[in-house]
Amino acid sequence: MFPSLAHRPWQVFCRVSWRHRASFPQPQCLGWQTGGAFSLWFSPPDCRVASLGPGKVHFYSTVGNDKDPPPKSPSDAPEKPAAKSSTTPMAGSPLKGLQTIQVKVRAVLKKREYGAKYTQNNFITAVRAMNEFCLKASDLDQLRKIRRRSPHDDTEAFTVFLRSDVEAKALDVWGSHEALARERNLRKEVEREYQENIFRSQQLLKEYKDFWGNTKPRSGQRATFLQGPGKVVMVAICINGLNFFFKLLAWVYTGSASMFSEAIHSLADTCNQALLALGISQSIRNPDAVHPYGFYNMRYIASLISGVGIFMMGAGLSWYHGIMGLLHPAPIESLLWAYCILAGSLVSEGATLLVAINEIKRSAHHHGLSFYEYVMQSRDPSTNVVLLEDTAAVLGVIMAAGCMGLTSLTGNPYYDSLGSLGVGTLLSAVSAFLIYTNTEALLGRSIQPERVQKLTEFLENDPAVRAIHDVKATDMGLSKVRFKAEVDFDGRVVTRSYLEKQDIDQILNEIQQVKTPEELENFMLKHGENIIDTLGAEVDRLEKELKERNPEVRHVDLEIL
Image (cartoon, rainbow, N blue to C red):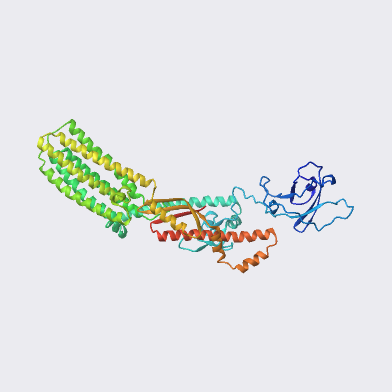
């Protein structure tokens, strides 16, 4: 460093690296400033002039971090022979033999420190301004209004305010931060009392409807149980309820352990399918503030509880009764009525099974899956439960009838007890499968790789997209998909999309009027913010087109990489 530069009022300093690094006394440094350029003279002693070659001049800004590397400049390029200076020293002058170098310094904006919390440029909606700062609509009329791109699909633009303006207005209205905080606490208490009154009013309204009868039409839920999985579940409830009643009478008449297991099996099926009907009715509810993604998973939750119920109620009681029959065998009365009831149960359970099979075939064909894949992936948990329960019921009826027949032929009651254990084992296998498949669905299962590839290719084919990364497509239930991806946008395409909507002549005039760093900063900030808005509009366009081309995709989250 040259100490003489430290006393100059310049905002830059220079470092000179000489091609020949021989040691020599400290040179002199003279210079002047003309306009936006600095002219420097480097004057080494006369004894070292011969060994001094042309040098490189590196410039560093005194504003900013001193750890930053030096900026690249044309001086870093391969050196060219130095041009002769237009300044010629006078004969006999001490400046004789000097090499004049005229350089320009790159202007660098001062780095701004925003701090950990910076909200001066934040936008705030009118609703938030009135709720968070306790203002009235008339108070906001006097503030600056800004039209911004709306995040909702049903509106193109909406009005926002600067948060700093709203805060200043709130202080003007309430006088101090303490008064504003007291008003906020008071309004919170009023809101809490209001919510409690709403809850009490809802309870009274419910009691009133229960007393006089709810006359509100429920055509939506009624239609749900007249087609698709709802129809299958309602048919299964009716048939299994009748089967339970007749099997219970047969067990009371004969005392057969196998018949008791079949009665418990039908009771478990009836209760579980009633639980499935509840899950279906809850799954069609509209999303609310507490559950913004809806209640699609209620069918999986009901099916999971159903699987647990089959294991605890069906398999558990069947095993218990079978073990007790082995430990304490008892003679069995006439099994004629039991056979008749089992035959009727076989026909009814078989009919329900056919209804479930036809519904699964139709749904599997609609989703482009095979019957086996549709069942294993548990795409429709309610119908799957009916299918597996009725399959187990048909096999259980055959197993119970066979073991009861062996008991009738041999007179040995152990065969009947073994039939009860077999039915319990069959039910436990069904419950284990239901618990596993529904747990996998609730954990968040990805859709098929072919469908993920289709969605990814649609985005990659867009001109504004360079690449897609970290793609996640999750089945939310009822074939509703949530899609998430990180998108690497092409900045040139986005900028061109912005420029196509602008007056190029006006932008050229603005560029020509830029003379100072402050004017350049204002120009870049103005158009930079507009380009960011254009990028947001591109994200909205991609999300909208993705939903239109793929109706099963309900929620799209595109993150800018």
